[in-house]
Length: 513
Image (cartoon, rainbow, N blue to C red; front, side):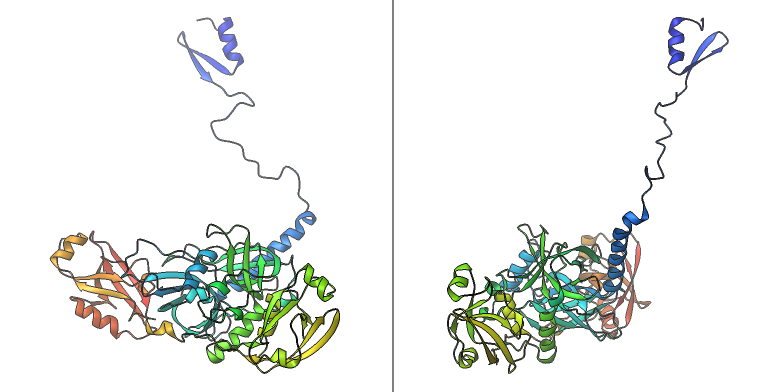
């Protein structure tokens, strides 16, 4: 074959080498410059244009600030698992707030005999174990378990809970905990950067530990008109306080009860609600202001309920027509519509059609703001009210009276706690051996792991496994196992050796609550 034929010259022109071996021609592909390489792309390792450090310094510094805040605050954020004795045990408030706030809904397939598990977040406010969260997170719980950042778990007791503000205080038996400071929510401004931090997790899993999202304060003084309708406290709907901080920081399932923090790492609110039609974040989240939280927490710790101060008036929002009729300098304030029985405000001289514009010199622009300012006082305190009465500005001093307190259950979570680490055992009978695939018919079977228990949090413990040893002591019967499990004192770490039907063994070291 001639190598100088037009056909072969054309082939060579596109990068084919023709080799002759003993009269035969062999074609070898030779990649030309610019043609694709089978070795993969040649990656660019430097930016196409140098980026000036000065140009990105503000963003880099902001990022470093977010990192520092997250590292400082997350150790004090906890996961809360609330166990209910039976599905449907929650009141309408719990169900309604789950829908609104995006907490994981109950599984409709769960059998009635299995406790219902709900969850949320919280944060430590004192080194000796006091934790703040939402009322709806722990509402009606028979047992509450708290998981810390260092992976320790504790059974918590309810110190006090207030459905009319959706604030609850629980406590665990621990010391030297990383506490998060409460800041001044009144000093926050719309447009200020904030971080929303949660520790939602799932039922026994750590999938969503420590979720941190960033955004700004979008608005202040928002009312959702949810707590008033769904509090479940008859005759006290007028005592509900809804004065939320609105933020575009993402708040999603399980973040209820976590802190909203400013750039100084101080908590300015408790993440509570989302505006959503799906149960997931759609643009706005809401937090209870820290100044209200501080006041409610103080009473919950002292008394187990909130001692409410009140003016004894029925109030309404002010609109443009009201401002014109009453001679207001702006469309702001709260209209006095009526008085309650033995009203301290009426005794002090206020009248219907008065418009309250300030409390102790602090401006009042809407209902929630007036409610929050009054709520920060104790019954018996004197407050100064700035009032407009048909164009004339007058001032009154009112001594606040105490409202009937809302009923709460103290330490409810302690009574329903399961014994020990939360497993139930049975002797392995031939019927059970067949059901779980065991060839032998002797041993001790884990028949049930109680939801929310210490054992439930360990992924190696599951129903259907055989319990071989407890603290290295062999167990030959369910009775032996029960005696060993019940003998373990609180705080002791039980070491379990387990086996499945295939002969695989597992070790679970579980601390007794």
